[in-house]
Length: 241
Image 1 (tube, rainbow, N blue to C red):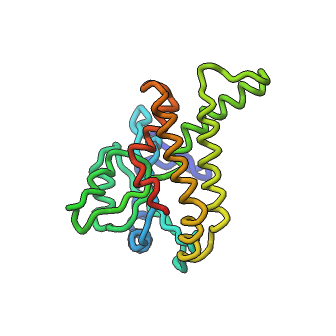
Image 2 (spheres, rainbow, N blue to C red):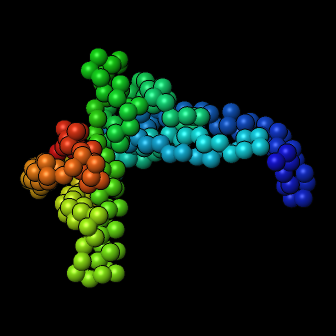
Image 3 (tube, helix red, strand yellow):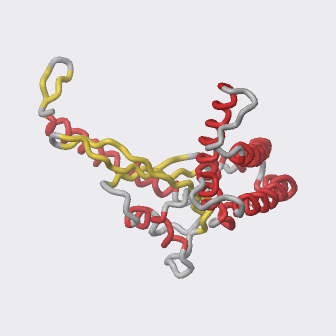
């Protein structure tokens, strides 16, 4: 693609790129204000996703990193915001650079590129890891959905290749999500009290159940892998309590 038509007028891609670049420069101060606001939060959610990038004669894969501050779940007064970073690859240097001045709580998946951020001797201080339950639930949900689809096709039968344990794991995790929905928007104190009264016993029971079931499964079992993902990081999963 060497040219583009705008209202019937042909513009070269380089001209359009220059215009986009000029807008980016003008908007940079606003971007910096949003970035500062996001990383002023006591906790942020971080994630990344692949994005297609146009290049000469091909489409390449880049990475879009997103960090979100949202204090509304605990009735915080600060407005929600998200800041984005782009990179050409997924190496650890990128989140380490993005979060170099941050020392709060990071809610994220188990991406290894975050690991050095959690080290005790990190400067300006260690970031506290809060594992993401949505990421942990996902593989169980995929397997549970396969079970339910199979049951609809053949009532009364469960496919031998898929363990119904996945269905039970989703049920137990969803019970925690339901508690979170019931306390959403309440004060920090109310949410903590609700989690201690209602969620903590469910989390303790979930850990016991997972460890018991994991011991019965082979290493290559997909349910076992999903359980292992959580059990290896259990303190981070229980941190929200």
